[in-house]
Amino acid sequence: MTTQIPDESAADQAFRAEARTFLEAHARPRPPGSSSSPLGKEMTAEAEAAHVQECRDWQATLAANGWAGISWPAEYGGRGGTVGQARIFAQEEARFDVSSGAFMVAIAMVGPTIIAHGVEEQKAYYLPRMLDGEHVWCQLFSEPGAGSDLAGLTTRAERDGDEFVVNGQKVWTSGAHFSDWGMLLARTDWDVPKHRGITYFLVDMRSPGIEVRPLRQITGYAHFNEVFLTDVRIPAANVLGEVNGGWGVAQTTLGNERAAIGGGGSGIGFKALLHLAEALGRTGDPTVRQDLARSYTRFELLNWLGQRARARAKQGKQPGSEASVMKMLASQRVAADSDLALALEGPAGMLQSGDAPEEGMFQQMFLNQWSVRIGGGTEQIQRNVLGERVLGLPSEPRPDKSLPFRDLPRN
Ligand SMILES: Cc1cc2nc3c(=O)[nH]c(=O)nc-3n(C[C@H](O)[C@H](O)[C@H](O)COP(=O)(O)OP(=O)(O)OC[C@H]3O[C@@H](n4cnc5c(N)ncnc54)[C@H](O)[C@@H]3O)c2cc1C
Image 1 (cartoon, rainbow, N blue to C red):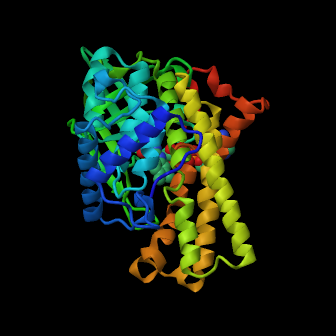
Image 2: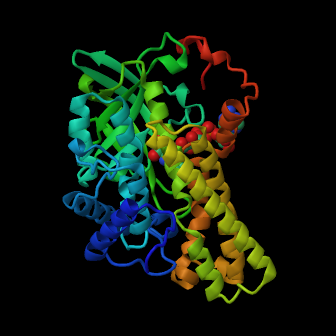
Image 3: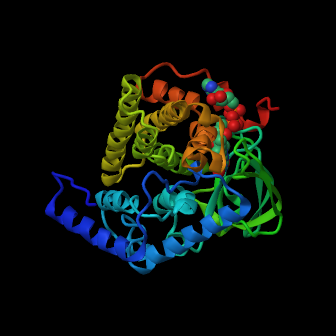
């Protein structure tokens, strides 16, 4: 099957054909109705380890053949292409049974942050190792007392010669148990307002003093973790950006995270839902047709918002408020689509795994919806961002913005 894009330029068509030739030679077509996302699958520790290895192998294949990091600079292992080419490749890749999901944090979040804020040595070391499948990354931002209010974090980093010594606790750290590196926010100055005393570190997850404890979720799968840091020594050369300038650096990561979650949605596309309705013989039902039309509309709106975000990236801009719109719409989509899927299944919606239709893919999507709706900033926080930055509504009162962090009341 070929993808027809009527207004695509000759150069883009040639690029699409080249991508397709590569993919056909190196990957199997994706079975109809299946998803590349682990969100639609039941996970065991063994299945997860196999998935991570498959992701590493696929990244290595991409890198070896010049298809990794399509829009990243060639000197750091990328292809040096355009954002439009990256989109074309992603469209073609989605039709094949491959995934780079374990590299989402690396390639969609920390990579662009290092490109924007890193010094030459950092770019030269870290970027190629993400693209070739060597380094899986995780995000050590949230803490038990700092989620939505991320700038309230209390993990501390104290300078000791050429190193910082870090103590504290992180939580909800996705994939920490299989990650090689982490991006870490820690407080380096307690005597300035909270946003101004934070530093962004790149930390080797095998450093002594890091203890990773898995947390089990509603799906039965331990996707994220508590991470305890006790006297962890991080070289000063691993500071990304300026000491105490980490909040600004983190905004680059968070904007890219929202765009990635909004762009990826639930990872289960409209076609899978349509496939389910067809398989259950429900596409003639007028109310189901309306629900499917609404689902399709949300899916297409997200695609168009994604185009807008890519146009912005093409101009060299970091993701802005449109990333919050995408994140919110993706949240609404995963909630509505999983409700619809389980309603279509009827009583079978109460089954799971192999007993349920599509191997329980939609039950997993339903249970996993909160990872899209909470992870990367909750729906309420996205609404705050939109209210203040897009609609120009008055901002919430924030006395904590001007007081030294040390003097703020904390739990
Ligand atoms: C699947 C998943 C994966 C995650 N992975 C990672 C990861 O890899 N790394 C990482 O660092 N973090 C990760 N997180 C954490 C995530 O970023 C936080 O859960 C999120 O920011 C919310 O913080 P919280 O859980 O502390 O909730 P809280 O901040 O305690 O919020 C509780 C409730 O209060 C609401 N609320 C809070 N403040 C406001 C406000 N000002 N206005 C209106 N409503 C408000 C929230 O919307 C929410 O409903 C992950 C979370 C999930 C669910």
